[in-house]
Image (cartoon, helix red, strand yellow):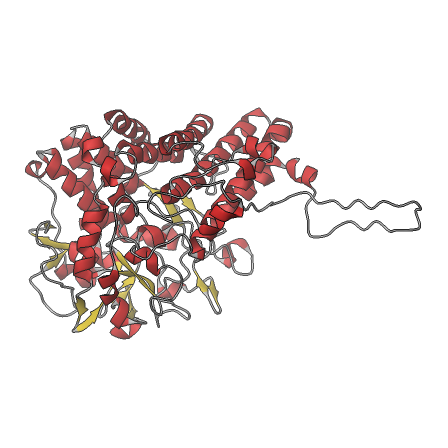
Length: 578
């Protein structure tokens, strides 16, 4: 495995028989190892800083792997060869060779390396420099950060090497196999990271500023248990038939903590995705970003994961990636205020501003999907047209709204690239409550789950007048009756639909489908439909003709080729990949 030796000590020893023979010159551009470890708080800060060390080729929010690979989203950009992400959206050509997979693996292990070094620093100097209480808290934070990176690696690659501070101290990285532990054993090691964090962290961190707390750790514990509660990740042994009730109860127990915490639903759905609300009560944990005016740096601490996702022609450098699908738009259709479960996709439809239509929509559509004829993210002076699509014959005319600010807010960096001061949510409160409702359904507590889902739908119903009053006549949304939740089967469908509507374009859709054991059914059906998508007579998405999702193989991404052969024979490939 390739490890970046961040903050490694460097020394040059020059032997000499005479003091006049050589002049000792201290090396520059490096940090003395002993000095670095003697500053444990700064080592912890370095571990936090790595959360935002992202780039469009290794986005830590995983949007190419959770959205492009699902039925929510098309890749976008200049065509199918623009970046290496095309195989992720059609699956049939996915191999271990894309450099993006290798970069993501490598960078996540760089983050883990920082965590390991921070734990060593805390072990050696924590109590001396910080005092016992703060040192324990900082160790809890680092375990949270390490668990966070491992969760992403496990979610993506399944079979990964476990490299902790003991492996680091003994320099055993290149002797640590990726099949040393099973998938479930690895998950329990990640769970242990978050248990250590949960036990060490307060609910409210006094010197907060984006630091992890007990509620964030509880959220991650719930997410871990929810994932393995459905099975081992492969469809043949994952899904309803494999639900582990004990693990589902753990989800409920940990989300109890979140539900009773200082967090809650932000009043308007649209506010969640505006920079000025980025640390609201909705934000349980998020990767922090900033404008240069906030932190007095040249370009601020921008979100570089989403740098490609600005609307074409709307921004100074919008590259038009991350394009919502017609299937996603169709899913927001309502009849009598409720989703059209059975026939939502019988016809492709979309609202057109100023044109009356009998078809009504969930209001969250207008907060999630940018559409021609409507204001771009609520601002009437920036109207979207069909010209705001870079390659409409390939990717259609929609654009993503959640991952960029309003146009009047401008970019943090607007040279050849663009970037925005948009936090990346790791957990928002609604996400955690939907996880809770999912577990409650599997435990037979259907009315409690209905209450949660209806609370979320009510917030959506209340999210019209402030930002999308121009779409009022298009919107109709109702709450579920008790008859809609009178069986697990009906409740499960409604929960899964609600999660799609609420969390669309937030990098979770594919992983949800995999968790529920329905990825192959949903995706292969989607490929057949989306290849015939049209907007105003323009057909797009024909490349889905070559798409196919293969269960037993595609559930997880392949171990990157470069990692397999860096130390030949050390790692085994995931099943189904060469």
